Amino acid sequence: MDKLVSILSEHNVDYEIIQHTAQINTAQEGAEYFGIEIGQTAPTLILKTEKGFFGLIISGDYGRVDFEILREKLLVDQIKLASPKEVEQVTGSKIGSVSLINFELPIIIDSQLNRFEYVYGGTGKPQTSLKIKPYDLEKINKIVGYIR
Image 1 (cartoon, helix red, strand yellow):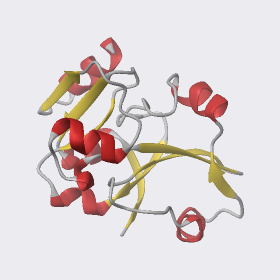
Image 2 (cartoon, one colour; image 1 turned 180 degrees about the vertical axis):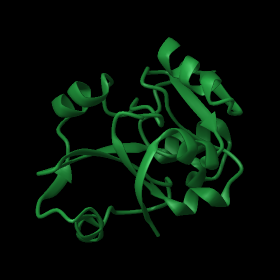
Image 3 (cartoon, helix red, strand yellow; image 1 turned 90 degrees about the vertical axis):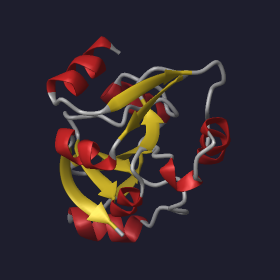
């Protein structure tokens, strides 16, 4: 968490780390817990391709991930969700807690997150969430593409 806070402070962004007692496992649970629109929840998924791992930050209302579109955007033949073990190896955190800030990974971001002033997602630690402006996610992460 210290590393995340120092990165956020270094980039001079407006953020809040929110502690909560409940483990939030779905976009719907996050929306209900924080009293926000489901689209403001921003899960970070980890994708595995023959070119390596990528992060995908999507709006909670995105629906089913279209792997064909991602395959075309990333110019890869094979793409799938990383296994829980791979997610932990790549990010240092478990599925459901993956941080919105992963500057060591190339990131694809859902441009629909920009509908909102703030989005909420993982910090890398369970029972904490990061509230941040979508613009700042783009500023800090290494964005390699957009969906929608």
